Image (cartoon, rainbow, N blue to C red; front, side, top):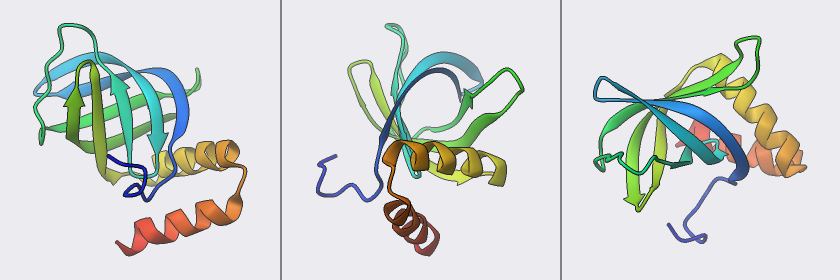
Length: 120
C-alpha cells in the first residue's frame, strides 16, 4: 500500500507472535504494528490466502499482557503478510495505543488516528 493511502502510523515492532489461521497456529515475526493492522514475516513454508480470517496474538511480557486482534489477510508478498484489524478487545487496544504513543512521540497525531479509527 502506498504511503499516501495509509491513514495510520506504523511503528517498528520486532516481536515473535502467533497467527491462528484455519485451525493452525503459525509462529510468525511481527515487523510493524498500527492501530489498524500489522505486517508480519512468515516462515518459509507458510502460505496464507488473501482475505483469510486470522487471529494475531502478540505477547508483550511475562505477566501475560498481550495484543490480540481478529484480522483479515490484506496482502501477501514473499514471506511478508499484511493484516487488517477487524476487531480488537479493550485491553489489547489499550496496550497498542500505549505502544504507538511511545513510539510516535506525538500525542496529537495519535488522538487524530484514534478519532479516525472510531469514526470509520
